[in-house]
Length: 132
Image (cartoon, rainbow, N blue to C red):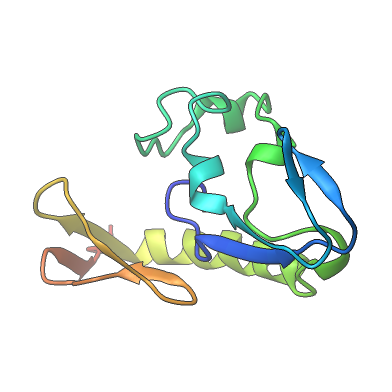
């Protein structure tokens, strides 16, 4: 969810005049928020462009809560966020127990539609694990 967020960006519209990082924004102005940009920002993450399955920021609970946005918050918060977190956790555990995922090479390209998804599955292999 940090390295490849399902939704790479969101847009919001200002409801009142405001200043953001020294830039004056009138009411009604559209603002694009790059979730993937925040999730890969070196100010918030050690080695942000590297995928670590055991990222120390999460293990030590030292990450900035504003820099990890798996589900948008605020007035337009995701209504199913709690259920989605539970499903992701339990579903991923079950998937990892049953399957081994490998890929050839280090590069993977993505299609940025409404949700982020792999451009091509040709280099990804999913095999059922052997039972012990």
